[in-house]
Image (tube, helix red, strand yellow):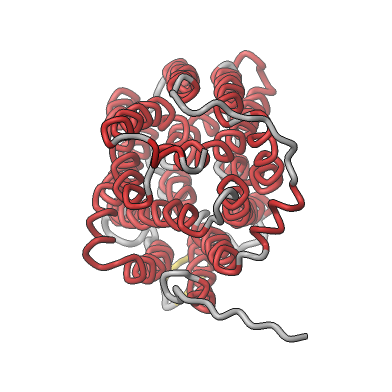
Length: 430
């Protein structure tokens, strides 16, 4: 399957890319709903879930994937990416439908909603373990940067536009039924994504006994892949909590109504749109090294600036929205670079495991970062109010400061980036 793209004509590869774009348009709503939209956070707060539960919902995907991605690579190689994607779509749809139906469980509604979100999260490692294998079949190396940029740009435009309209329709006190209907429709759309990928004309999969130990050993011995995975994992530990926490801060820290939070959260999607649209152009003009170093700087600055956006700052909500835009711009470029680097670093025949290996590190960082933020918000370990330079700080702002400090410490891992040290001379003499 790895050499399949080279056997296709330019027209065939273009048709497959278009089909893949459309598939992501169907599935992009579910991903952005958890990562870049305030919809789930507002929904959970309406079900009387606390700050910790709302924050935890944004980290469940990573928590599941950190334990399951590497085993799922074996499942993909055994049954084929298209069959696994079919199961992923059904699982995701069932989870989101349960989330939408949560209010019928009465006092246990918030637990039912979290169970549904967890069900959706179980589908993600199945999807991610299959995704890079499918892309390796339809993309030549020189097509990757443009593909990842346009793919994510296009689905962000579509999903962002519709989430913006949803924000207009919500009002200050949205009816619970409206949010339920939106989540249910998004769940059904995931089935459309699965259908388009499952019916894609790829070479037939040949089931084989999966040598988990051997495939993992190939990735472990791949030192540039190891270094990049460690770097990505640490940066997600530092920055992954920042953006969902900023949306929760708008609701609980700045006391904005639901419609204002949803509307301002569209700055997240706008930032992603611009990042995806400009990614290919930035890489061509400045190169991957300059881009990745710049993104690291933005991760530090966004978290630090959010820490100083207190209630006493004039127009604080608009400053937070601007920082959400910049943060998601950096986040979008980071994920495009991450995808491009995975395909570049994977050894021939080891794409599935290399992607699972790198994603495990990244998802572990995300899960630990968001899980820790959820724990600290929920247990009251941080002082709710304190002062620095005559400025009052809340527990949210304290966490932003901690994230900025971690991102700054992450500069010690900068030489793990393949773009910074493209040539390795590994030496070991015991």
